[in-house]
Picture 1: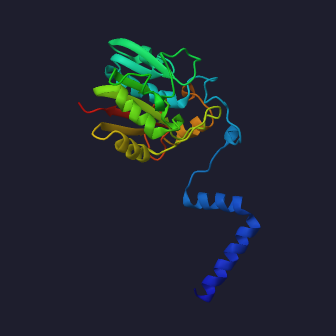
Picture 2: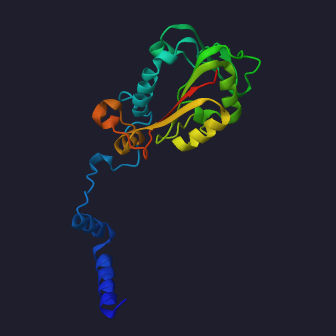
Picture 3: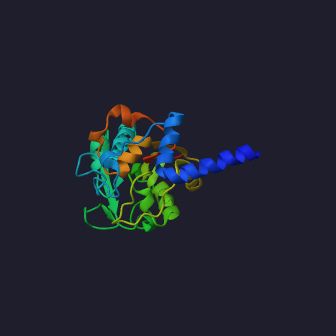
Length: 245
């Protein structure tokens, strides 16, 4: 570095110290043509909703989950098994002949009261055409055992439809053990379900992920904003698995 360059660098450093880091950043952004944030009431350390936006409307991740299930509603048919309740089976199912449920607690009166990772003697093998695991994968403590059970209870050629949280707040009242990227889930599921056709996708964008973190609702954004897809910001990760015949 030449003496003149060294002097300029020293003067610039002193100017930054005098101006302060916040002002320096603002000036840098203005000079370079970058936008400045207008925080308003978004500058906060607590969310607008502590319940994912349920108390405001529809949680952001449900927008993507509902789209996913609606797209594959033809696969929610025949004998269907769903975690906890049969709400999604009833809403999106087509030609359902049997709707059963399972859960580890009796609160919703499931068909099968069991720990899914150890349900060998409770849920019969190859009994279902479709298994629904919405927002369930992160809560399966013994994940590999549970994934093996999922493949066991579904008939050859059947379907598993699942989802997992991405850029969402932790549940809080229920333990979460796994927060993987779409690539991470793709790797894990391909190992657990060899020979299956597996489609893993992330859904969301920067705005949707910020809205989800703040507990805002779907109704507070537009469909055009929610439908922009940026793989760096997956609010929700969906899984479509077609088991081999």
